[in-house]
Length: 117
Image 1: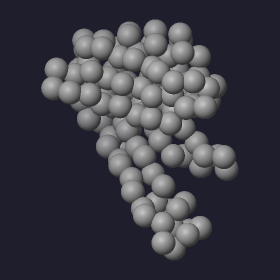
Image 2 (image 1 turned 30 degrees about the vertical axis):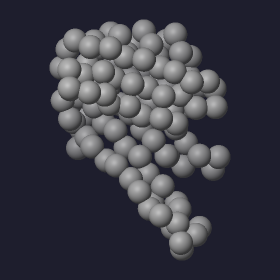
Image 3 (image 1 turned 180 degrees about the horizontal axis):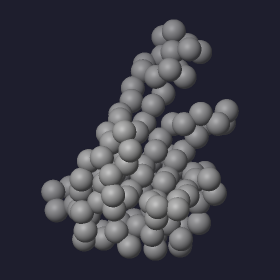
Image 4 (image 1 turned 120 degrees about the horizontal axis):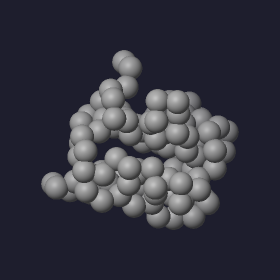
């Protein structure tokens, strides 16, 4: 994955505007937190192939951490802590944030076609 370039990510987000897209969104600290600290509070989210249509998309933040927001007719979907991106050979936008040890902490992926299970 590459370090975020806001102009490239914003342009790609806008290519998916006003069409049905599939998203994968995931956050985790569970396995990492409890492994190092038995008193740590574990939390996580995993949703794959949810279909949404968004009318506005924004990337905000700086090189330490970006936030991606997708405005739907009923509210917002957002992911915070994003640091890397990739546009793969299937034209999907893959966004992620990893901790200092390279472990996944947050992922947001957007595709015109479903993700494999």
